[in-house]
Length: 257
Image 1 (tube, rainbow, N blue to C red):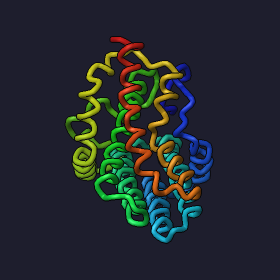
Image 2 (image 1 turned 135 degrees about the horizontal axis):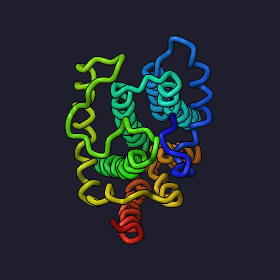
Image 3 (image 1 turned 90 degrees about the vertical axis):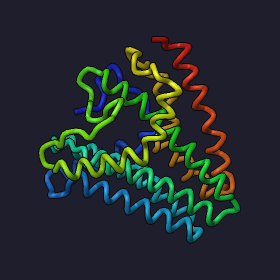
Image 4 (image 1 turned 180 degrees about the vertical axis):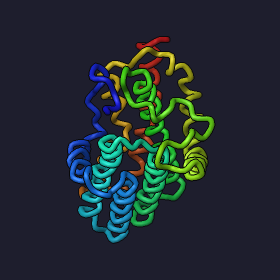
């Protein structure tokens, strides 16, 4: 099952790893590998990338960052191929993402001259960027006929476990998820409280929005590292965050509710 109906599909600049993800998932379709195993694998790739940053091996770090994004696309694809949607997988994926983002930036901070406070500000900015992307994307997915609705626009309580997972596991991961993402969700919802009332978002707007997708964010880091621009990564993402107000402004002016 696709996340979106055909008429709602758009060029997602952050989803460049999807072709590899589909290929990899197809290779695992008839094996004992589960989407959770794939999630753990992209986590391992992220840890290797962080280690490479600490060792000043920026080319290899870039490779494993991009590989992480490509593998990240495979767990959801495998879940759809095996028809095994999972809240555990969804929350674990998201928790891994925010943890790895923090570790990447801390590694960059350690090997560069960037202050810890600016690094934390960049981390907050990156998470707000990704939250805005996910907010609008989930709205579109929930309004798309036949689209994926595993993710909800507003999540206030732990969902009921799906077949193959325990309610306790869902509850624990939901709690962790709400702790690490809750503040960012509240900020974005406050900035654009009425976005969910829009009937749909056109493809060009979603493509513009996809510059804030995690894959595109990581691609920027992967490009800057081997170009020896590590000192500029944190300042870039701080300034890059200002585009949030531009995108929300476009939504409010062009797509009024």
